[in-house]
Length: 236
Image (cartoon, rainbow, N blue to C red; front, top):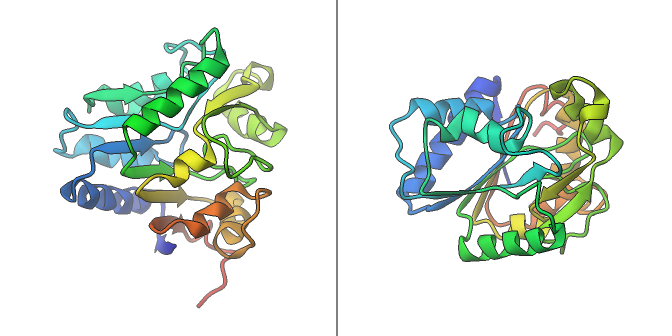
């Protein structure tokens, strides 16, 4: 696990973008993408670039259950607004949060991932150490699944909704086992509220109580952190 320290989120996005360009130059064809505020600077760099994704595939980590694709807080909408409208891919996959049979939807998504191995996966990290929507206690062996969101995650996401009661209580998420199949993983974290999770992810025991800790066992992980997110790490 390589940890890169940056001044702020903008510089973090620039570093992540340089890693993406290197991956594409080395043949990457499928990108694993994330939503939320963490990757925004990265997406801004991508949109401003001359990179062409018309022959590439994207697979998103997750989607809320119960939100239509055109809902302003759906992850489908987020990706179009921040990336896909400017940089369309040959194929872009997100879970269907309105699927009538969620069990079948998770199986179908696992098949998509199997058919399109992820070369370069972008991740954020939750304050409780979740990656994707894999909350503490999620089995490391889990593939795509339906998640009952923890109160801390609902609270963290409530800033994007009119009231906390409007935040969906479930999501479809790529599983930890699926994430670990990615060839390269780039995790970004910014801000003081991520410091403890970063500390435990980098140097704590590997435990399902801290889902991101499993990344210690991946062969190619880059962690990009600003000064605040890195504040609990032991200085070398």
